[in-house]
Length: 202
Image (cartoon, rainbow, N blue to C red):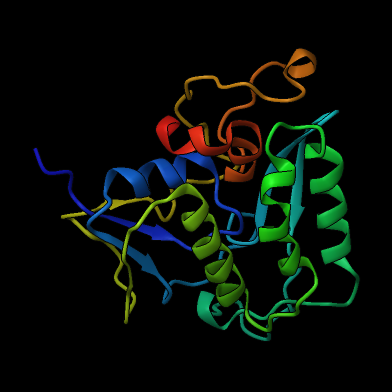
């Protein structure tokens, strides 16, 4: 049976479930760049495993005059040095993981270079992650906003940090002896812990 295509939102260091769907719908992925930006979602937030449990890394965005800013128009704020904070957090949480040093040079530039737009930043990072995972999917983008996609798996609202996600098959996590397996963390958790095996997990 042919898996139907999916429409996905653009996320910052997307969670594992996002990549599972990407891997499943390989041939037919659409990313919505016309939707409105929704606060407190993975669009500008990633969850990683710290020694104290879940740590949320949030990319600050410029407060827009309008609430209804399209996601492609959202600007990143550099009022404080969030890049340094995120990179230190990633290093502190994953330096002891099996594969962090293999991949750190791929991620470091994203915490040194400045991008204006959140969408572009997330997209460039996504391309790097897909390359590391060896997922050769052509990604297409929406050119207008549509409320629903009856013939696609629509994950724009369901992949939400505040919603319960289906339990994933556990894989080794660095701090699991403290808090157990944490579900649906950022793809970097899987990548730094599993390395080249990550794509088989997906």
